[in-house]
Length: 255
Length: 255
Image 1 (cartoon, chains in turn blue, green):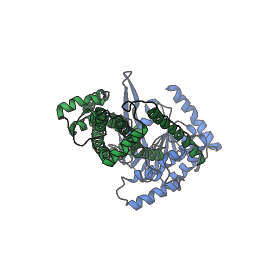
Image 2 (cartoon, rainbow over the protein chains, first blue to last red):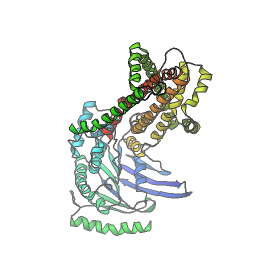
Image 3 (spheres, each protein chain N blue to C red):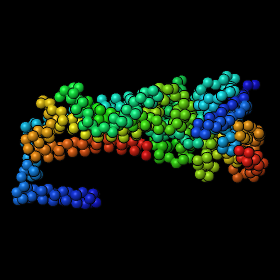
Image 4 (spheres, rainbow over the protein chains, first blue to last red):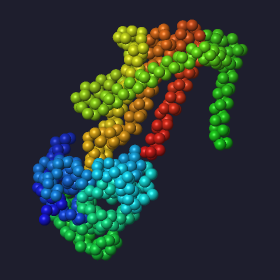
């Protein structure tokens, strides 16, 4: 069986112009992700996890290696590989509905009415059925991230890449979103790859957790078999997170 | 309502007192009307020249010049701004020139304009365009350059191509900056036109600047003051009627 996404011997080096130094962000990284998985890539800042995500999204080039998507090498951004960012990156000149419709603009097989219906449907799924006409500055951080989620999911991508999507939110908003994220993942069956530096978050959401250390080296790759829906306050989840935490701390020390 | 009346009343009273004192000084003080015409004389000029059609025609001539000249300046400025964004060669050549020319007071263009175009409409448009195009072009370039990279990434993963990216993301994202550049350009264009109308003497189609100039030649200080008042009112209204509504709308949408 071919995996949905295969990263093969990927390398990427950045040149720091001001210091003349080279940073090996990714060095010969390989991993694979199966259809329908929720993979949490856990790692300290600077380990190259965001770089990896941007390369998978097609936003950034690799120096060496390849990314196979359904067995075919990728060559740029494609709306089947959608990406969400730490900042919701909504367009402030459009209202909520038009932001979601922006994602659907490039789905040619849908009529205008279908797009409209689809956008409204996904606003309902993310829990914002009554916010279609609002402007972005009228939304809280959590609501913005929900709209970004609706905008990403409405075009029906195969895979959703999330770059620390919850790290800018307060703890309470975050926990609400964890519940919704699990519900939405189970309902839509999307493949999700989420990058985070929060161990509990990685364990709470991921069906698999990878630990990434410097140069993108993966030193831990574990299936999380706890049943969904999971709560951050479950004892078993805390135990699981506790067993991964020392690895994370060691990874941080290495950097 | 009562508050608003109260707030408006005080300045109105003070204004009336000022006019009354001015009138009293002119009537009782034995001041030469060439030095200081009375408010009544000034107002009388407004009425008579309006009745004769001289003033309304001058207003129309000036307005048509400002609108045409400014429109050309904005279009050229935007074009230059976009070209700077598109081509580094263009940018490194034109930007330093634009930065330099922007510091040149617009009246300094008038001698050259007359040498090239004679005492003509073309000379006047030349001064207006040269006086305002640089502000528009530099702020267009600056605001396009400052569009957050995140918006562009988000649009790319959603499937936006180059043209769509430019039209639907870069331009709307840069719009607040472009608008404030256009506003600055309007102020420059208005000042440039007044300089040009006073400096460049054409006998037919007298604008407000020419009326000012003729007023001085005839020692008709009442005419000079009345025309100045009209120029102030037009400058004030153009800001209120053109830019303030657009800015308000933008503020309502973007916060």
